[in-house]
Image 1: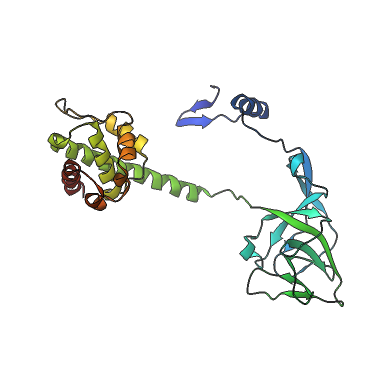
Image 2: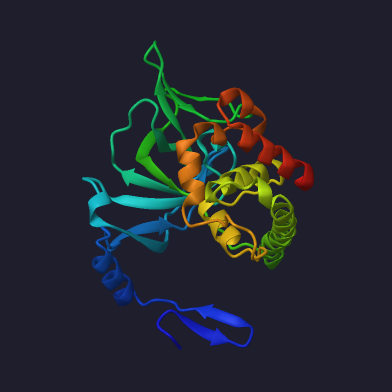
Length: 291
């Protein structure tokens, strides 16, 4: 096994770094970081983002660890969300609500509210008549007016939302890989056509900067999404006839486009924005062969 990878029969398996190796590597590269060494309890109960749920007895299910710097004057705790009344605030089923216990709520804060011994997560708000409300962020639900006949407490104020991160299924991962492979095959076909077109139009190349025109045509006509640096590498590796005079050189495409702003525009707009005749001629020649 090497430092980073170990060879398997069908490829390479990534090497999982130990915490000590990670910290040493970050220190060596001058990357600032904070160690998550302060525990935050995650309550077993879920806070409902819909109709209020019975608060019941609170049980600690797990602990999360955060850097000391994010812990303020009040202790923090996490509770999983359920329901859909807060989707307008990007709170969805299974997200963790990271809350500051005992913090003073202000208008617009998302709070954990206990109304008649039932928990709910809503937006805290005081209207122009000084009436207190708990507001949902989904039109399916009605605001809750806090009146004297309701026993209401605000145990905590939500400070951040920790999005759930489910593991993708094999099918979803395979679909992503297959799309990438298909795109790679299509890209290979494009560069085969580019090679043929460049060979046939070799007399229209006046310098290595001509490859910027090739890049722009491939970008606009063939749907190429790679960067200029990647294109240059592919062009430099292209097996062209020995008689071809103006091969692509490192940085030629990037320099040319940076010095000719019209090349960042669609190729149909070049003529009206300062392109030279020889660039237009090469562009049209390549477009006819590549479309």
